[in-house]
Image 1: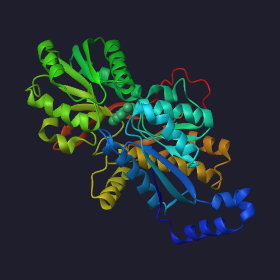
Image 2: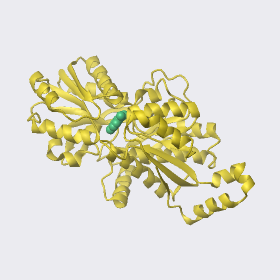
Image 3: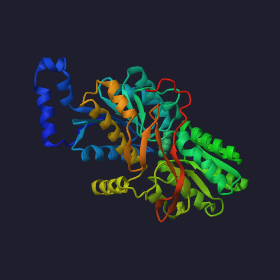
Image 4: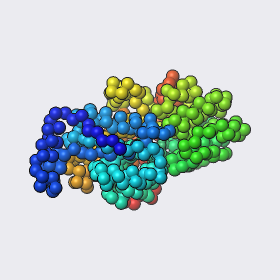
Length: 401
Ligand code: PHB
């Protein structure tokens, strides 16, 4: 675990320091004014190692960039960060989350990427009332049956990004499709959502191929695809696994023979490493590299200036997580204990995100455009809006805000 403090501007640093030394008694029983000047503690629980390492790093970088652009503050309070590498391991997720909430006493947890890890985090957040902002993991339950006023997502639900692809692929003339993914919550739910959209449109999923997360021995499954000769393939992989799958698919000679589609994670954040193997791959996602709205143009420039790298959906989701928390804190003049007011402001937030307009449903899940993209010249270029303002059905969510 590492701790760091955002570079605050001079005024916020002095305010924070003055608040801390004001009075020992007040520190034990903080008055709202002193609590509001104290550093706001953000706990990042993200993968910084393993197949999703780059994804976690980009969420982190996007969040920090937005904090920096707001003068090192969220809602006027200086910010401290605590990082935990969750390694995308569900088995250690509860302990990691408890450490952030208990020992580190963070004000909010921002995490994570992996759906299975996120499920454990959601349980702890519900038990302890800790504010949780999920900047990637799409597990449907987080904003479905496990929804709660203190749980938000600035990413997507697994259903939301894949359901529109069913109609897109059917409209493209594909009737018999093979799916392939990792066998865990995200893979199962993304394939399930695609299948729902595709079969409703009149298509047939002829075989669902899967391997355990995070295995990357794709060869036998790719051979099976070649044998089945479907009209097209729909895939969910992400991070390092997605790089290898797209390259293996092309190396097997299937590129150009059987069109490859997927959720956008197949080529987002991975496109550079995939090279020519990714050309022509079509995906649906709530982002495209070339969205020419002013927020995206400014974001990509700022991200490149700061990191020297090309921003992607993971960095956008991190950036928006910081924007959302800022809305909650500002609504209460920095008093995070005024929970109801903060939550109401966050549920009602309308963010000018690099992805386009971003608002939230009663379960705290984004309402957003889902774009059809195609890899062209090393970019995820927008083809069209596959479906505008897609809301997740939030099946099973009863509490809401
Ligand atoms: C997930 O596990 O929910 C997940 C992981 C990586 C992605 C997208 C979703 O890129």
